[in-house]
Image (tube, rainbow, N blue to C red; front, side, top):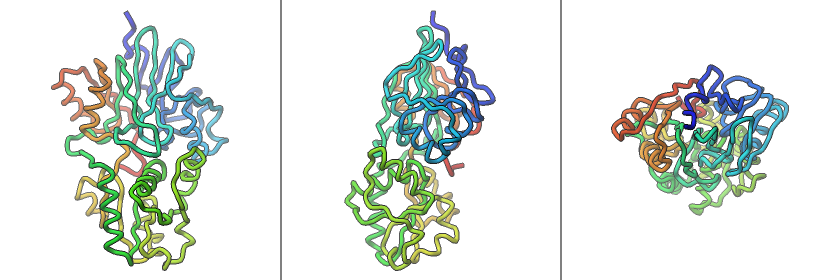
Length: 337
């Protein structure tokens, strides 16, 4: 009988540890061997001696962390297998950001899949989530409450463009995370027919350039920090969430303050943050897509981590699916609570 994953995949202080493989998955502190699901700072940290990840994740890590701070790296393409000590590891598209991967681990006939962060909505800047059959599926639950049901991103882009047309003398500044959300917004705006230059806060430029080097088309991007105030009338400016309410935003022409986040579904949060145009755009699975994914994977057991665990555990119990919370700490989407 294959050994149950709970006997060889253990939540420790440094993160989720695969004992027969001798590596951690997205460790919280520097370790000797790390397998990284994606390049967001809460999953990809500096100081590991050896790092295994996809080409896209490693490229973004080099941009954000620095080559000298990520140790020895090994690239593993999607859907290819690698033997590490007594286990077989493979990486599969997670649909979260460029390079994001589910981490599949097989040991003596048992298979566990660690989702990392993922979404099911299509995204022109990264490969779509690919369900993997397994014995244990480890899922995130960032938006693990029934209230979170994200609209199609085309609807939110249409809201933004309608506001740009309605207020041609004002600058629309959109708060968004530097990795993933920023590039997705740009690509979706282009698909919607918006081909004017898009202006960026300086903190967003480098990751966009990395995306371009990896073949993602983003159109004309200009630095907002050097643009004349008059040039920004009627323009769209993307900036980190912290910048849109900062002195930095004063350079903009009567700005319409926008925020692109799954949390914008909570109106009180948008109002408290003085967001004039909330855009419900998330790079995580919403409630319905969490349940859809669990059905698609078909695993007899689910482990739930970093998010709203209790509601999802209750829903799974009603579906007669065995589930438990890992309660790993230290994982949050960038800039989100």
